[in-house]
Image (tube, rainbow, N blue to C red; front, side):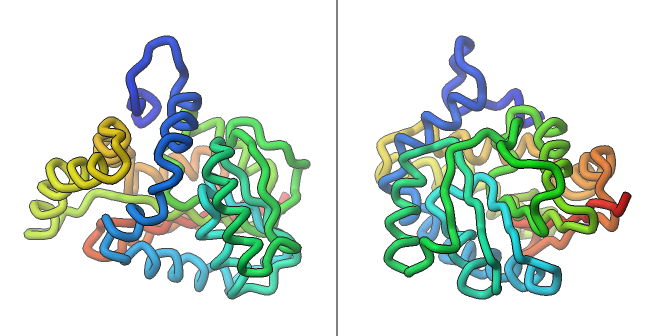
Length: 246
């Protein structure tokens, strides 16, 4: 399970603390590396998620593991949301996000807050949509975090998760494995000077229970109408689930 994979492997620190420390360290380079290392395809994946979100009620949105706010900004630009709460463990990532949001003139819609997804600081039945983009594999306790998301969603509310996954088709699988094992860590280190952060990335992807395995987690936490949509040969996947009406 991904909970056993930590960026720095310090036995004295929890995964939550290590993930926070990692993103604090790489925050100045995160946006550049995110787009560069994915060849810009991550922007297309994020647009796909927004398109799905647009079909559901979206007055109140929670964006978990928001980082520098990319997904929250896309949601705010394309949807008529009244408020988007954007939470993350890393204050340094959110500092960059706040600057981006202010430049876009969206600071009256997007509100950043430091919070842990294992204990969300929101009331029951608050949000129409919850989104998590490239963050769910960093959750220390996946089941507890999904349970918290379920709690804060309104009945009929939509959960959308965008995450890296495991390509299976030749030659995408082979090329993807070589890229993750050799090229990504090397470029990540050259730019960020944090070797562990960009070896943790492929390790956490490999350990993540993607596809049908992750759907089983969603179902066990009470989500209905669960489905997954692989993209770009299975390099990334969008997962969705609905909180049932009581």
